[in-house]
Image 1 (cartoon, rainbow, N blue to C red):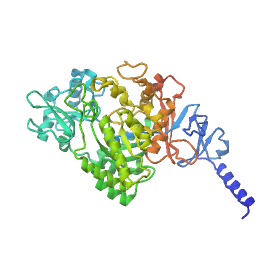
Image 2 (image 1 turned 135 degrees about the vertical axis):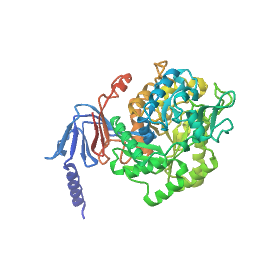
Image 3 (image 1 turned 90 degrees about the vertical axis):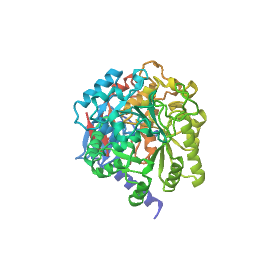
Length: 544
């Protein structure tokens, strides 16, 4: 075949592709594609689940049956991908008591009492999300709620999920008493007489969990349905879910009903089940995948269980906790999982926890050889300068949740010194070092709203309004950097950058329409921006 014929064939095939008619054309938009080679566009043409055209003139894609959707000049970005959720737990939170905005003891007590009046005797009181820093730092105790919960066991979590308040009924059911020893990776708060106060930290909460009845499949399905509906209203088109095995089974059971994409990362203690599941089913598909595992090194700063190099300022008796009860078991699982091509997503908040897991990732690479692992540190909250640089050099992804800063900046100075805080939520330093930074929410621990995350990343404002110019303002990033962390970087973190994360021909049609151009408005107005439309797989899953 001569060169002329080859050229004619190529021109013919290209012309056919150009003349393909779209099922839908979203036009007259202010579109940020996320593609550096073509960052702006006015239309998106879609066939089925895929984008067939992005640009400024949509007429060549318009056929007799093409549906035209006028975007009315509104701002369009790739679908938001939340890189760290506890998604079904979030659904249960929507159905449980919410103490997130409680500002004092009396309000805490009255809200729990009002809630208990409307549930049957014997039902567990769950939820919580309280923050004792909202009322000066005094921890609640079982005495606050015992008087009206004699018939209802209660376990109410702090907002970070690393500390909870149990009432006397729950402690009694679990056999937790003065004689109960602290479990590995956890601690029981005690009064001056050695009696449990009801506050349980990290693995100590596990003393209560076996007493709580397992949720039925119908309850799990309902929680998932509520979460999906809520996520769609916020422009979220995919979540990376740090989940348990029941959650994964729920996703599989509801696969045909999913209105967003799920990347499930079950906890490492389920590794044997996970390995067998992967051997039978592979890693999943574009809509539901399970290629990673989650593990935890430490707790949280708020609960003083984040593992630090130095003592806490307000409790010099502790440097935090290693939550993993058996680090040898964890190391063994990580190595076996690595040999199966499984991605790691390891929770590390304190400086020592981050150093430990970065060392471990490096050791695994040296033992098993280099490959495209994309290992992740979930939170990466407090980093020493030398460890910030390691994320890029070692090819490790920093998976962070900017909305946590909004709360923590109001009180973190009580816990740790300034030299530590300079490496806290180090967004800009990580980006400047060329590390891959991705954003999520940690919902149900913090707000699921990506706009809250973007707002916090670009302002570094705190809830106490004491940082109008930004808390450690050198770490402020641009709106476009924040958008990349919620889109293309998140896609990369899930091995999907060839299909998602930018709006370009050949990729899946996931995008969100916003009422304001986040790049142009005052950053303080980001939280006043509304999600107008959410599209997943070329289908509208939310329209305001």
